[in-house]
Image: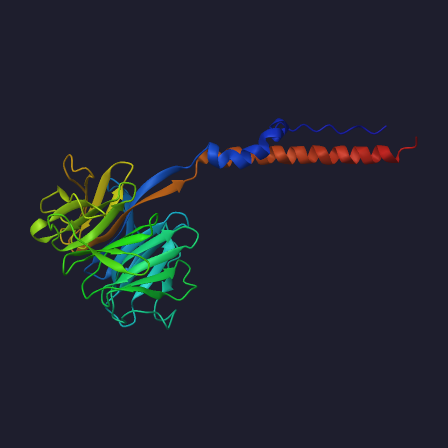
Length: 353
């Protein structure tokens, strides 16, 4: 008489809940978020870079090397896992929109004159601010201040980029987009004007008290509909105003401005971060104007930060891997048990009655 095989699987008891775990784990063990500062570093030596650091300036690392051309705008889409940056201005046909992973891996051209011969813009233009809009369409918006145009493209670069809007002659460095209400905002640095942008047009926004003086950096708190910006000139400092132009106020004043350096918000912590191209620093201060301004980073002589942006990146919970592994083992054991049961049933069916 043949011996019956007895197999013990210690994970079999997990089988009834294994499938439900695999489905529910991403919710039950929500990924924590790591918050970083991403920004461009312009160097007098020409070996520019896209960098990131912790919010306190620690763990600074250069993710992507950018040679020869000026580097300016930076934007990150955590959903797609890509960072985008813009270069141009020195060599002909160099205006380029780039992308790399959020870790700086696999940099590649998304749009330029070589990849898209019909690429719009000035061959010697300066593509400045860029915004990854996220969502299902994965669209990109960017500015070319040499021709005063706003362009629309896609993260993949598969579609032809098109001029979305032409602005009056000026200097346009950064833009913000309210994806909920489908409007954007951009400053004209030269004429100290604020424009509200819709998909088809733009309109001048008049601010209470006429506070604008060479504004460039801009950020938006969508929920409260408050714009934040940095500027130099007579009213230098960090300001905020309602998107309707009311209640303009300077929340941080002093020599720390944001001359073409970029500004971004950490809404959860209630902090604004801004970079100063001339003073080589990244600063932070409370969005409500309380407390002192802190220096987050001071870069070496001959270098300057641009395009600073606060980014929340999801970090997978290490428990997910271990528990998912146990769940898969449990499913394997249950599958083997069912298979052996089927074999035994088939064998019994062949026995003479």
